[in-house]
Length: 298
Image 1: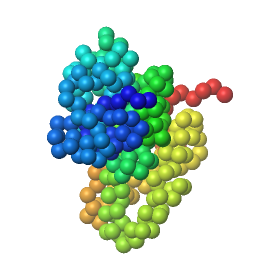
Image 2: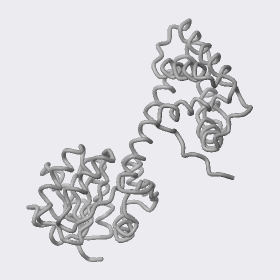
Image 3: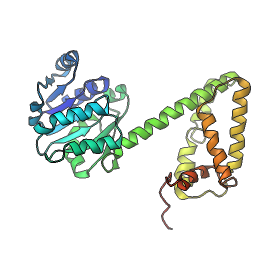
Image 4: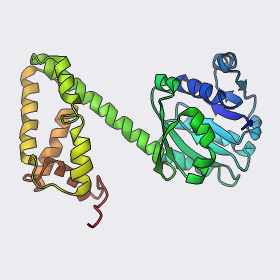
């Protein structure tokens, strides 16, 4: 392909992404910072977008912007100038409702949109080890594959439009929550003379704290709707009480671990005390928002 690709947004991630695209395509770039535009011209020969009409020469437009409002404003400005076969690739971190709204902005002009959220830090993007979490029509994703491959070879298609964005937000929510839990665990360890390197080894063991709730209890018990045997929920609640007591006696403030204890109390109150403690997931089903699809009949 010799047609240029337009990239909107030259922040830390957007700049590196544009640089990777420029290795495969002529690249047009836009940013509010003249300094970033000049740096892109020097670093990888990108040409600055002077007006929205410049995108008429591009089939592919990549957004990497700091806020959904920025993506919305850019798309409204670009709408009259986009080609009828244009594909907008939204790589910004936004919610799925935003993605679907952005697609609505393009209705009537023929242009389409896919989401390709970036799961990585800047250094991973630089190294080519980033992952794109994709959502949208498979035919559009296939058409955009040369540009997507230029950004990152590792790609996962999660489903309909917005699914990639949702997966990114969920991944980050888990990572950020786990960071709070790990900080709390480290504080409790320090207050009780536990060697931190050994704590890290314990929690990172595939059979222990960080991994097993996902790879065994969720992936097997919850997805299989199988809560027989295992560690009873009542025992898990007891262990949670012990953790609260340990933190209290050690003078360690708890936030995430303390809040999670309430879920175990609710699970016991709901009648799941004797089932494996993964049965807390049944609470979300009781609330009409299941944590997993219904198991397929055997």
